[in-house]
Length: 448
Figure 1 (tube, rainbow, N blue to C red):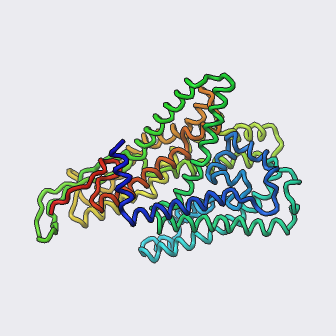
Figure 2: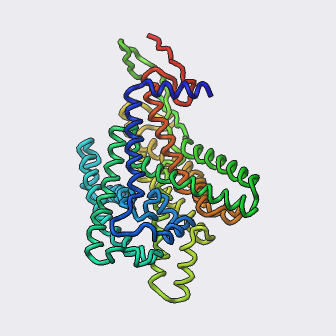
Figure 3: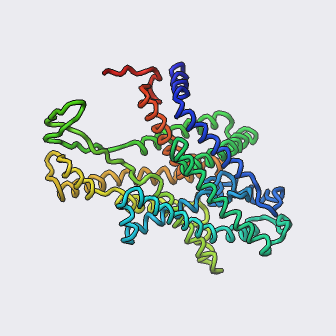
C-alpha cells in the first residue's frame, strides 16, 4: 500500500500530468452537472415513472446508463454522446465504400480533421431526428401531460430540440477538450463516467433487495461481488490478450549516437485476441432494436410475440440472437479495422519477414489466417460476457439494474477505458524516469 501511495505522489510531482488530470476532472464534473439540469418547461417532480422504468434495466436502462442518468432526468444532455458515437460508426463504415473518404483517410492530419468535421455535421443531423422522437416519446414512457408546463406545442418542441442538439454538441466538445487538454480518450471517459454514476444506486437496490427482504442476505451479496471481480478479471484478459507473431530482421541500422549494424534482430507483431473492442456489441444492440420496433407496427399475435421476445433483453431468444450477431460483427469489424495487406507491405518495406513465410502476399495470407483463428475464441468470449447479465438475472436472481454491470457493453467500456487511461498515465511516468503506474513507484535510475 505504501508503494501505491508513492506512485500517486510521483503522479502529482509531474506538473503537466497533474494539470491534465485536474482539467479532466473539472470537465467531467461539468458533464455530470449538466446531466441533472432538466429541460425548461418540464416539471422534474413528475418524472418518477420514467425513472422507475429506466432503473429496472432493459433497453431503457441501457440508454440511461450510457447517458449517465440524463435520459431519465429529461436533462439538456438527455441524448448524451451516443449520437456522436453513431455518426463515427457510420462514417467509419462509409469509408469502406466511398472513395472520397478513403482518400481523406490517407491524407494524414488534414484528412483526419476533415473526417472529424463530417462526423460533427452528421452528429447534428442525427440529433435533429432523435430529439423530437425523445420529446414525443416521453408521454409513452409514463411522463404525464401535466409535466409539460408549456404543453407540447411548437413553442416547447422547437426550443427543446435546439437545447438537446446543443447539449450533445457541448458534450462532444467536452470530450474533445479532455482528449486535447486532459489525459486523453475524452469521449470514452464521458461514457464511462456516465456508466459508473449509475453503479452505486444499482448496487444499493441489490443490497436492499437481498438484506431487507431476507433474499440471501450478506453472504449472497459477498458471493455476487466475488463473481463480479472474476468477470472483471476475465474482461481484462480479453482486452489485453494478444498473439505475438515473431518478425525477423536480417539487417537493421540502429542510431544511438553512432551507426551500428544489428544482425538477426527479432521483434513481434501483437495481434489482439479481440481487435474490435466493444464495437460488435454496439452494432448488435443497434440491430436488436429493429425487430421489436417493426413488430410494434402490427397488431397480429405473431408481431406481439416477436415484440415480447425481442423487447426483453434478459430473455432466451433475445440473447441467442444477440450472441450470434456479436460473433458475426466481431469478424466483420476485425476485417475492416485490421489491414493485414498493409501490415505485410510495411513489413516488406522495412526489411522484415516472418520466419518461414515469404514476404508479400504469403505474409498477408498468413496474418489473415492467424487473425481468423484467434478471432473465433475472442468473439465467443465476447458473446459470453455480453449475455452474462441475462444469465445472472435468470439463475442467481440479481436485480436487472445491477446485472447490467456483470457484462455487456457497460463492463467492457469501463475495463477498456480504465486500461487505456492507466496506459496514458503510465507513459508520463516512464518518460519522467519513474516506474510505471503498476510498478513500485520509485525513481528509475537512468544509465547514461
